Length: 624
Image (tube, rainbow, N blue to C red; front, top):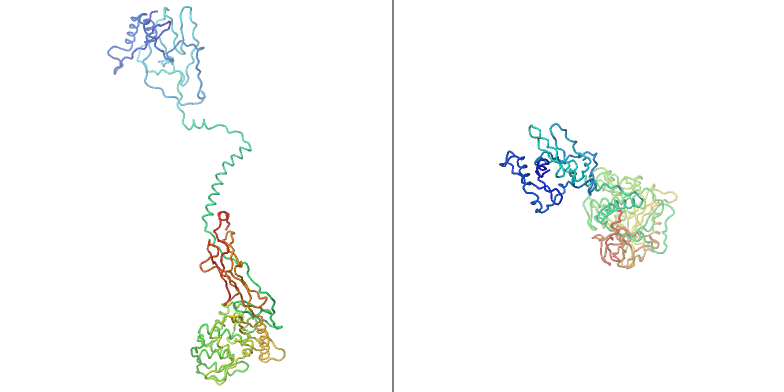
């Protein structure tokens, strides 16, 4: 077969045999106009012209040409046994995939007699199934002398030169078929979504579970969480305000050395104390008993509280009413006789009548004058209110004179009243008088407290009381000089009943005076100054609230007046500026008080060592 015949029968691409190999020569693409035909003619005419030019070139032209490299897609002489590539499915062929979109631009149709590697769709011929490439059949055996022939899968077999080819089948008449896209040998798989690719890379089967892997995993999970929680807890603890430091005494009480016993009577009840030092002792059951005229001490206390006086001041004038005149004629009670209605006396004189003569009608008159009423009940209410303020919990007043047996109290309660009322200078001046004359009265007032004139007792008041229900009662005050001090000694003795007949408690009054004289003399003799605190002595510590303690020491010596064996109360209080969180050693931060009441002794205390703020560990581990 001639080259022109091969071109005419096999397609529109010229071929040349170079070195025993058929080489297809690429033909230039014709310029196509708007209707697909240029000035040179139709596509078929251009193909025939290309074949004629190939025949005219001849073997001489082919020999002089340089072999051109043939692309791999155009080589047809590679047998199946010589293939080195292998098709590997990137995805399961049975899995549904998205069909790749094919290009719509179609290259020129091949010439009649040549078939494409990919079957084309013809009218009346069904198209192959989508997504599957037809499997090529076995290549036919080559005849002797036919030369090399190769078969492309799915393509036509090449006929050696010099062998007759069957005539090409003429194309059917009719409208031109739609352009067909020639498929490549391998249809590219469309790219998968990035998340699917990432899943394939990361979805690896986990390693087998072991106890060690479990422990390591839990440590990796919980360690950051625990560290975060610990950091938050530490930060919260450090942000909390520090607790206020406080001073704490090393001891609550201190007992003076030695022994002392108060000569108490066998019956009744009593109590003795030194204001400032504290209680010296008490005896008997502290139960409420009638007070008799000792109740007039509360009457005077309320009057002076509502109408205070200076020591030498006469005070406002108080008019005697008709009721006071009538009460002055009563038998079986102490009274001022000879009152005249409308007469006026100063408050100072009225207090002397009340405390020295123990006049019941004057007590009632003062009660009515204070309240501005005709009844004493409102004033009695004031008396009970004052008792509650003083802490007299076992005391009840029912009248201002104490004549009523319903007015009851205890020796300990009356001692509280004695300490409070003896602070008033006008009261002290009145009760210290053994006697007094009052202008406008025919009689001289004699104090029933005969201990005022006993030598060596230094008694300075304050009130006696006696009647049948109460027996004899006495509230007394005495002094003793100790060094450069003169402390006050206060005592009460109640419920003293004399044996035998005792009209209005006259004998009981003598009994209580005699027993009180023994007590006063014994206490005065034992009373002395005793050292309690030494300079530099550790008396307490500063508690920072988180477990830290800094010692406190006394800055000087301290002595207290008391009796041997007396128990003193100790109280440690912060200074006026409060207790600091940090300070250097020697800084005064508080005061140690020894004793109770007005006149109690005290000593400044200072830091024994440097006071520092709580440590980091203490602040982090605090629970309060």
